[in-house]
Length: 417
Ligand code: ADP
Ligand code: MG
Ligand code: ZN
Image (cartoon, rainbow, N blue to C red; front, top):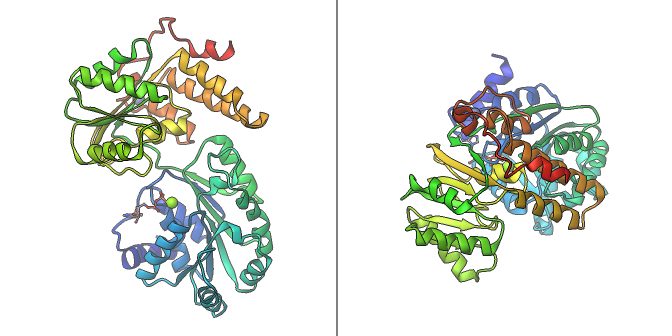
């Protein structure tokens, strides 16, 4: 073990109080400690923050962290301070006393971690000051915000390239959970002068069983899926409000306990349904994608899609709400010709640029390729995120082989129509 790895492990237990690294963390931290530029792609909750906090703590000099969310900065500064690490934030919430205190700490070279709001990047006095104060490395959290292909583009992030050059080419490390190839390449190009070392990992959720079916009679298919899952909590996503109401009614008629959640309900009813779902067991939440953000219910045992999700990223995020407790959980996604037509139409009708539409069409194609995958579904899914694995042995395709297409749905044909 190298000296730096030994001190990384010591820091992990003495500062953070953790016994071991999560999968991938050590592989990311090692090149960072060696001074390399790194782009790390790991799913939400994998532990990306520690990958820049730990090198900041044991390395020399100041680490500047660019992060788009003030609330998140505040939490991390509080946590680091609590661990005894000198950390501070510079954002629009600072008053002038606070700003002066932070500047003094940096001037005295006492600060280890500075969280910087993206709108500060373009301020020349901030940049000059940070250059003169010996910034050692730049960490960019939520790096997909720099890409117009990502779902969360922030124009202020475009100033990062200039900021970095103004600092004098400091070591740059970037982190994101968004990983499709187009976004990845775009991030690498915008944030780095030379190709960084790219690390992709942690996307596999082995306890989630993956299955997809061509849609023929959705209610019958979903009732069949629910039959062996009575008493379990789960979510069924529908693309429309009317679809939610209709399906929930059908499930209730068949003796399930279904509730609905969509933006058409008044706030009180929405909150009520959500609370009931969180508190009680055995409720099927029939919802649009408005449901699920920030919901932390560890024992969701299944997630189904009555309609095709928007993209592979959306699919991954939505099924990812099942089985957070690590116990087995089931998923089923239905896809039909109508879904594909609707999605195509939405793309064509949107206000997006031609280039963006082209990317959206590609994303839809990738999703359809996953629906009609000839081999292990998990392998196909993970390869979209850039991760290579062996066939899993327990997805629908590993268990039953590829479905024989009956001609009712031929998504590729629909696409070229
Ligand atoms: P991400 O940014 O990848 O979504 P976070 O950095 O917010 O994830 O980390 C998610 C959670 O995992 C945090 O509560 C963090 O403290 C915890 N965590 C990170 N690394 C470890 C570890 N090695 N051992 C245990 N918990 C960890
Ligand atoms: Mg994070
Ligand atoms: Zn498989």
